[in-house]
Length: 266
Image (cartoon, rainbow, N blue to C red; front, side, top):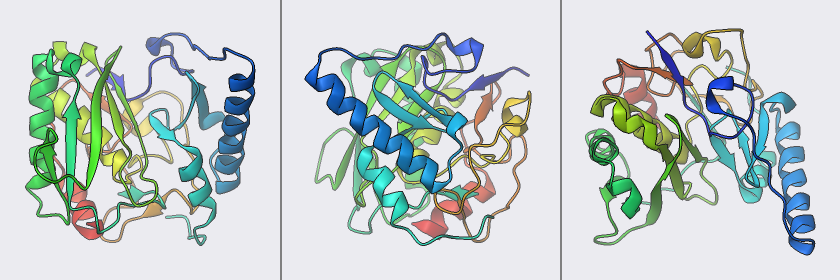
């Protein structure tokens, strides 16, 4: 069965995703952005992420190939107590004060029927678990936090980790997914929403488990890869919706360990 990469198009190493596009325009702005970029990279390395897993694309810094890291989030990683290496979470989680997360799709996103259906199904996945927060489509009612659902090219997605107790504010979903089943769209969107509330890849320590090819480790340091009590410490193909890569046969449903991870944290 073919395996597709959940990663940001334009950022680096796997040939199927296209070539890299690194940015830089203007003089004063370029210097400031470069300084921020270098601090984020330095913080990530200090937090234990391998240098070869840190990528820069369109002025943003990513780890794990699809998780955007802001300057604030990178600084928070260094403020956490070190844990022993051991489904996995980041050091940054969503605060208990966040009770309603509104997912607001752009007009372009709504124009793709299966992306739109996949978003509804992904929201239903989270709401079925009775978590400390609910998710809703659109900015109706009182929103404790808002996530923008946007489109990008390719057949993957990207997002980021929580910062300041709030979920990351954007998920980017590839329009190429519109040619796949609603289940695959649901899977990818649920996965990227998982990053926004603090989940690492279940196979972060060896992406080959779900992606195939040579072993690739996203970083096993305690900060940024904390084992969630009650879940396996090892990954398997199809064992978690938070695996790095997905198959064309995905249903989009949480596995038992996914549900345990979410209910343990939230």
